[in-house]
Image (cartoon, protein in one colour):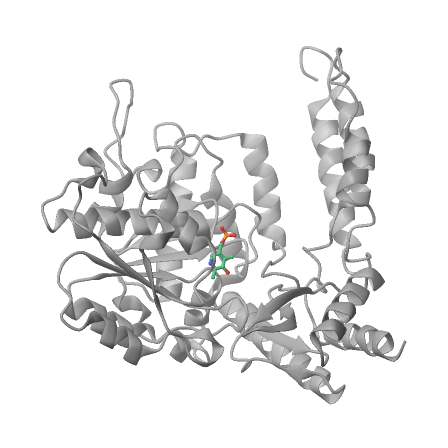
Length: 458
Ligand SMILES: *Cc1c(COP(=O)(O)O)cnc(C)c1O
């Protein structure tokens, strides 16, 4: 009991119990939400209450209000976007993190949080096969990670021509040439905007099948280049799962003194599997990497990682100081990510890697890929067309015309056995499947295909 007579233990226990009950029925729940955004706003809404309410009542009210608008995206038959479901130890760790309420900004505020990040960062680098001296930052997601990686790039390439971008900004700075494939993730442009480059500064490199960059076009564009240069590559295209030829592209860009950033939000995890590693061959040659924890590593939101082969540029782009700041002289987590005060993100990462070990990480990645291939085979057998070469965990499915594909996507979402979204790829509509969850089994694929088959016939 606290001083107001509130039984915190009972309250936290009840909240954890509800969360566990939800997770227990995920596999059988309708996948899509039952209530719309508007209905949920009405349920949550009303005037700002003047008076408070007992904590236990608030939590009970929240549980009953939230229910209708929850999406079983953590469950085994959610195949929309690229999301994953958080593994048990990582989820339990996240509950503890909320209870401990640590501020992970630096090692003075929380040695536990800083150390969990330190160790988890080393483990992640080892898993991905990144060089030992690489720095690691824990971000809210891949977009934040990419933005930090590109800030480090900006620091370095302008520093090399004598321009201090942190002090003098970009007005009047030497021009930085920035290249990316025309099938880059849409958030690359936003990262560049936030860094003051402007999306129009992006020069697009042609892509080939599966959206991977055309190396010949990259080479041609760079002939004779001099001056600051950043090239954004991709591991794992969101539609096809295809990865750029990282090693070869890095060699080309480095001939011109450029910086290579790899957006590997989910595709970077191909690196952990001996069967898939070839797809990201040479990734260790890049200068910085952005990656997600909350997609294919199946960690709770918000979790992403930025790695940088030039730790001085990484910290140089982000570190700051003020007279009241106390630091320990150790690695300070806040110098490698954009926020100061923040949740102790590294703890769930540590727990997740401890729970599964290297073998478990490899198993989830390989199993998802094999299930994606099975999905493609079974849907082809139903007469669907597969729009990509299924090299990873992403499958593009056409039901014939664009209209029929859109009709099927809507029907599948409404039916509720599984959930897939739509996309436009090379001018044609597709249903996009992403298999990214450790819970998904062959039976989930069979059940989903059966649901799709029944909708086709009606
Ligand atoms: C998801 C994704 C992003 C953005 O990542 P967030 O974690 O949502 O910030 C960037 N690039 C690629 C390739 C992605 O799949």
